[in-house]
Image (cartoon, rainbow over all chains, first blue to last red; front, side):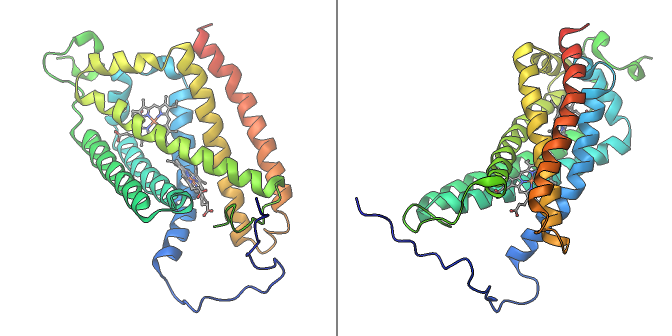
Length: 151
Length: 125
Ligand code: HEM
Ligand code: HEM
């Protein structure tokens, strides 16, 4: 086996501008990763703090717990933002990873197709769940429901 | 992208390993999030279905998984902040290595705070 030829430029060569100026898709995507990252720190740390740290942690999570949180529009908006930003940020990040490793055009197309499909379906599903949530479904065992369902 | 055919500039050290860890943690969190929205969606099926599935999160195996998830989220978030500083702070690139160790220290402190409490929740003391 012959030794591979290194065809990357010398690291000390000067950076050359691409000639592309002003906003373009890749630049916006780059900005979005940073802006959404900042917001996600607050959203996710808050989410983990309330759901894993406070009270009994995971042991305290059940249907009534979720009903209690989503009775408050504050947590609905919180979760909605976390859902959209998290999936678009993560999806965009995975797009980069696919671009890096999937070398054939066909494979890249298939993987990105699957990725976009999963992201869209998950965002739609999560959004519907938040907005159509019913804390007192008829016919459910009353002992599992939050106290606001009484009477 | 560098590959085996073209050779690579990466020489290991903090800069490369933080990138590897950032990539793997981001991928893991994304996969978790897809599943997590599905499990949360069970609240629309029935309280019984939701409680049944969420019950698995309270087992020891999942409890350990949650430690891994929190570890990945904390690293990705802290290192993400480091990346933002590298890009936007005029001295960012000069201090990238120091900031990496800063990330590691803050990560260890946060995990040391989280672990005992999580283990107490898990084993229900
Ligand atoms: C083990 C750790 C976690 C637990 C126990 C947990 C628990 C929960 C619970 C109980 C809910 C229901 C609503 C609420 O409480 O706000 C929820 C919703 C949600 N969680 Fe988490 N979570 C965890 C980690 C995460 C992480 C790391 C992310 C982000 C990457 C995340 C993103 C979300 C989103 C987006 C929703 C809303 C889902 C929807 O719209 O249907 N969670 N989580
Ligand atoms: C907690 C706050 C977060 C911060 C501060 C953050 C920060 C960042 C930043 C700055 C990048 C861009 C790296 C680059 O351009 O080279 C990035 C990439 C990425 N993030 Fe996040 N992120 C966060 C949460 C998340 C979440 C919740 C997910 C998954 C749902 C995720 C998945 C990814 C992925 C897959 C990449 C691509 C990695 C790569 O190209 O190597 N991140 N993150």
